[in-house]
View (cartoon, rainbow, N blue to C red):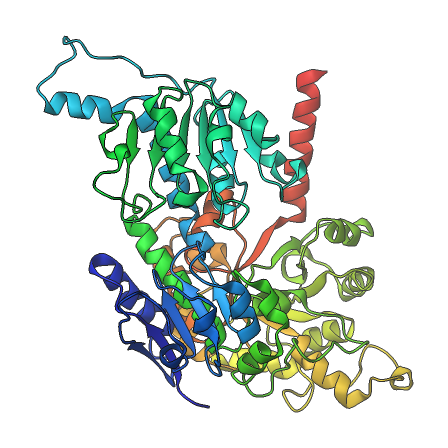
Length: 618
């Protein structure tokens, strides 16, 4: 396989450039057969095909990629944007050329949303006005204009209910707004009910809102979506904040309504022409707060943007489709699929070109990881009943883990539960009581489990034993039972193909729950067939002598080590968080396989909430 080349243009400087090189080391480290190269500079910031096709992937910030950039490309597979805007890239041309365009929505989500709220607070309290006043020698006893307002009870209108828009509304819920309105033609009311947002048409939002935030992509439909007519609908006391792209607002029209006092003010991080010209009237307006398209670029964002951008590229390196595609249609382009399939590990099945065989149920956890999204599952500990499979299906879970280790379920119960799940799309794993008993492992696999969660794996030898017990030849020595009589193996599926497909779809979730497991982690993770490294956080904290202290530096270092080693060997990283703040922390560390709660805990919380609500109104 040829060397995998990642290209960057000489458009980086300072802390941003430093974060980029540190992220490269974090994500790619000492991975073989790859390197980072600096491409020649183009005076107009234009990407030319003769330059970019020397690379497999690019990480870009400001460069332009018009249609001409994609002419005759044979090698390039990915343009990874250091951000979420992609208006400088012709995505239709990228599709035709078989080039994926990726963005980093998770990295920018919080930082941009906080900047939105920051602008709102600054405008509401007149911070810029008072800052200038005190620097001019004025004090509160002087004749100062008091235009500040409280946010409590005011109406926030958010245009664009995507990644950043939803996070803005989430933060705003804690501020005390009387109402939060949303507008987005692609989002339904049901999708944002959890945020307490009321979806309305654009005109209603503009007329009723005291503060308006814009969080939309720039395209033909959003260009000047806020122009003279729309601005005329705003209250004279309203403020508007734009963190998206400058041309979303007709800047000339905005300047006019600000001059005429028809709106109270604006907070702008983006402009129609960038950099902003020195004679732009916005620069002299006291009711406008400006930032040079950088206000969201925090220290945390520098790290997260760079890491996520390189992770998108690493998906291509691993022969996978990146998760955050700006041009999802590329997944169906034969030239793109051909390029990434060449990088797939030997012996793996290309699920973009090979259909699933009829007797093997698709593995949704593996499918999700292949598509670079987070599979979400659930632990079954206590309720081995008929309804559990339907609940899991209706909840759209990717997987469940039936827990033999802690539940006391016998093999008969496991067989019955697996039979119930066979009629669903939910992928079903079994956590066996011990990981050194062939009988437990092979029998639950024969009964229909699609993989094994093995507790407290401490050595590579132990991990290899589990694989040997759950995989058919040539990957293991599991007996050929198929969970059915051999004479039933009819139709297009023959035993050999069945075994190959079953081996691919079966998943090994390897639990790391001890210091010994951490000490041998590199050796364990290097084994082909170990799919997910799963932190058993309570048992791990216990073995480390800090039982239940999940904020302890020793525990945090251990979890980050699992993430680092897992990324090194392209393994899934699994955990079962105890709360939403804890979930966010695990996600920030790179964990990407999530089990949300156990059956008894989830049902108890739901019932407690429901009973409390009924009592409050009864």
